[in-house]
Image 1: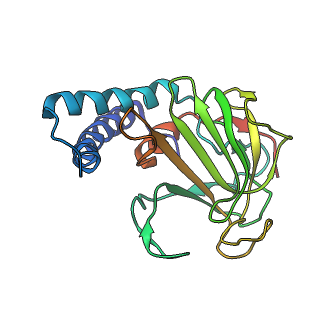
Image 2 (image 1 turned 30 degrees about the vertical axis):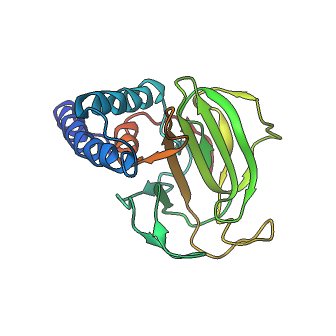
Image 3 (image 1 turned 135 degrees about the horizontal axis):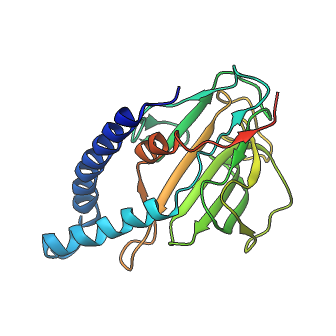
Length: 220
């Protein structure tokens, strides 16, 4: 469902307010076990990191089908919900759940321009691809059923480029493990600075923003 201009503007205001609250948590989290830094300086640094995410975003990762109006996705704010595979930990991402639960059905597009930094199998993430954006943000797409092409580290990708297809791979040491959870796409977003090489941020609000920026794609 498309939002009206007024509703869209209200959504952006809400997103900015919520991200401001999350940045407060992010600053506190990153400073655990470190020497205290001036609060204003620390906050400014993380606002700049978040600003880099906004600069990179172009498209929602799942396009609209030109042939199947029932092919939609939904998602909730599951940030830091408990996950228990291999131990208890927080969910560092957002899961896009399909209305048509069929592996290999939904195309997955790059949200940004960037370069392939990681590709291949992960025990938790299954077949995944990680894109390092122009502004040094890492976008992580997991549980793919397959890749669109034989990507290699260092390959340049464009926003809207087909990366692969939504699946249910992962949660297994053996490559190709499937069926351990429903079909979905896990999206993760990570920033970094000199002190922290990999810091997860909540993708939910960025994805809510990108809902208004969907490409149309032929699949049925």
